Length: 301
Image (cartoon, rainbow, N blue to C red):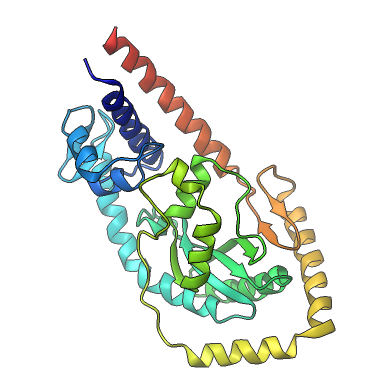
C-alpha cells in the first residue's frame, strides 16, 4: 500500500499528464515536474513516481494508459512548430516595436510547440496604461497585413501595466501564464510573474520563470518609430484616439461574435475569448479525471 504522500504525488502526476492529454500532448519527465499540479516535489521524486508503471511511455514521453499513440502526434506537431517559431518570434518583435506595447509573449499551442495544421500565432501584449485599445488597433492592423502572406496573428489578450494581476486563480490560467514565452519586454514579463505569484500554489515547481526566454535583439529602428509615434499621439489627441479605438473595436467584436462570459473588456483589459476555450478545457479535464478516479478507486478496492 502507498503512503499518503506517495499517493498524493502519484495523483498529481496523473492530473498533470491528464491536462496535457486534452491537447494530445504527452510530457517528458522534466515537463511533468515543471507543471506538476498542486504538489511541490523534486525532479528525482517525480522521476521515481514515473517509474511505477501508472502511465504509458514511448521513448521520453509519458501518456495516459492506452494513449501512447499521441507521442507520434507530438513529434509531428513539434516539427511543424519549430519551422514556424522563427517567424513567430520575428512577428513578436515587430509587435513589440508598435506604439504603447511594452511586452510581447508567445502563447497558445506554438508556445509549447504543439501546433496543428491550422497555425495561429497567439500573443499576449502588455501595454502602457490607458493605451490598450490604441495598441490593439496597431497590432490588429499589422495582423491584417500579415494575412496577405498566409499567417494569422491573434492578439486577443491585452492588458495594461495597471492590470498585471489575474483575477481568476485556476489551473487553466496558471498553465497559460507559466507556458508563455516572452519575446520582448522581459522586465515587464518578470513583473507579470511576480504579480501572479499565486501560480506557485497551483504549479509549485514552475516558479516565477519562463520555460524559455527568446534572445533579445537590438531593434533601434523599431524603437525609434515607436517613440516618434507615441510622441505624436501624446496628450489630448492620444486620449481621444484611445476612446475612439475602444468604441469602434468593441462594436466590431460585438457584431461579429456576440457576447461571451469569458470575454473581459475595460480601459485596462481586452480579453476577447469568444470560443469558450477555457470552459471546454475545464470540462474535458474534469471528465477525464472522473474516469481516472473511478478506475483508481476500483484498483484500490
